[in-house]
Length: 149
Image (cartoon, rainbow, N blue to C red):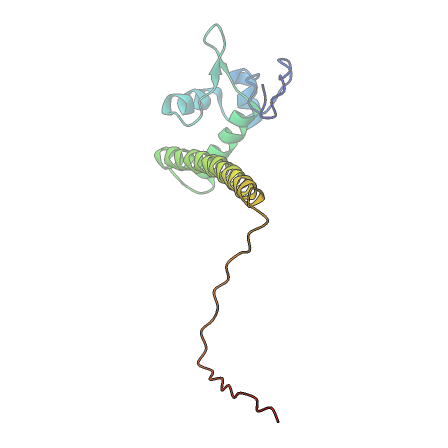
């Protein structure tokens, strides 16, 4: 099932679908197959495995391979640093998902509280007058009896 509660088509391809063998993934990423194997051993990119233990790369894996190559070649970051960057990016993504989940829970709780509050207000007796505090003043009123003539 997908996030909307509908059953997902098992033949539908997504960015997470592991469809590319190592030679095709190497060609698409512009890297040598041995480099892909090394990145897998180091944990930089973790492709799925087919039944015969062959690696199967997804479009997301290929994008990550390109990112690793760009960080290594253009930015001069070593592979250990790239692994740490990827770990931190994954942690940030997980935390963002958790924040979104908690925001949804808070909004749901706020809506439930408002409904409960509305139910309490609806149950008030209508023949009672709400009490309003009278403000104290220091005004002096002088009363003089009227003299009838």
